[in-house]
Amino acid sequence: MRQNLSSFVAMAMLLPMSLAGQEANPSANSGSQNISPFTQDSKRFNDWSISFGAGLPFIQSADMTSLKNGNGENLFGYSAYVSIDKAITHAFGLNLQYDRGETRQGFRNTKDHIPINANLPAGRTQYDAISILGDINFSNLLRRVDNKSPFRWALHGYAGIGSLAYKSYRQNPGEDYHQILNHEIKPFKLTSLFGQAGAGLKFKVNRRIDLEARLMYTITGDDEFDGAGVGQTAYNMIEDQISDNFFNTTLGITFKLGKHQSHLMWHDPLQEIYYKLDVLTEKTQDIEVCKKGDADNDGVCDDWDRQLDTPAGARVDGAGVALDADLDGVIDLYDKCVTVPGPVENNGCPISSNNNNGVVTDESRILKGIEFDLNSDRILPSNTPILNQAINYINESNISFKVFGTTDTRGTEQYNLDLSQRRANNVKNYLIQNGADGKKLEAVGLGESNLLYPECDPAEKCAEWKNRANRRVYFEVK
Image 1 (cartoon, rainbow, N blue to C red):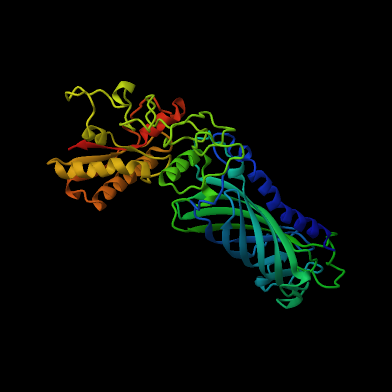
Image 2 (image 1 turned 60 degrees about the vertical axis):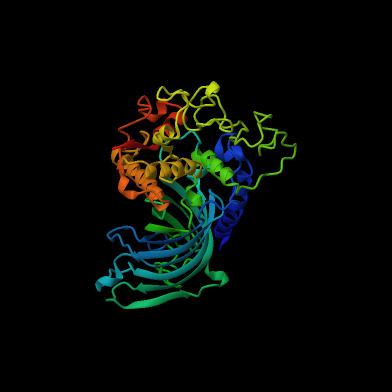
């Protein structure tokens, strides 16, 4: 009786194992050998959330269905769910979900109090269900690291098993609202086992809230779920199969829990290299032991290290190459002006005509400002030294400053304007919280209107380091 359901259960149990196999292969997720295999060991992301939703169920495969049949009506019930969601990796999670609802099926709505024609019954079914669902984030499995579009949509797939309890009612032909309890199933028994699978499209509203449209298909494994009638040969077993199945369409909202900026299921592979640099700066990332050694002790195994003689103390990218943030040919370890290009003979600082020694001053470097990650207003740890110098400079001077925020050209004009204002506000608030005179500061968002590299419109025309330079906050004297 439950052969189809058994196959469904086997597939659901094997699914996490297949995902784990993919996770072991970094190239399957990132598409690049320069990005290390993703793990959640460093706990840099939130991984718990709570979801709520409501919608319309309709029986599709049964003796009595919800969609129009002959001269009948389209009958829709109601449904609601709540779930506690745990992300295991950025591509797979588990949901503990409770569903409650009522399906309506047959020739006419049983709430109408109207006699039904001969041999055309109607029914309704009240159900409760508890299930464990596997959650696959297909967008993270298939996303390429060179995809520069904002990561705000995600396609999820769900499959799982659980326990179903229900009461099915039937109104016989010719009777006026005389409903009979047709069948009842208690929860947490072998006969109450059911399976469901489906897909959902999520939209990230912000770091705390997601919206989701979901379509699920439920396999009850029971021919009495629709209320057609136990032993009623006239209208029972019209459909050959032994399982009454139904679709459930819902709209839901997810609240992401935790103290971090991002949720694990929204991990963006494009920004993994920037997160990695931040973590190395804070010295909180565990270094993986290399099987074939790490000659220069830079944390990148010799098997894929493209620079085997990295100087001690230098920060490196995923390929083991020493970082040069301003691309002036002087690595950051030896560069005295890390964010401003300058010649090698001047220790990476630009030649200035405003002073005698030709070296740019701290004040000039401070006015150049700081850069931000894609689609982020978070101040990076690597920028705090510059901001701390700016605090002293602002307090010691007798002038006021405008704090300008900018973006690159990705996204809409209004979105970029809002993002640039948040960046400017965050920098201003950081300065004030750490001792700067707030009366001397004014935060202004410019959006994409004042690009450091104007030729980067659209952003795809330029290298990523130029787009990153356009995502900045800088200072100007009022």
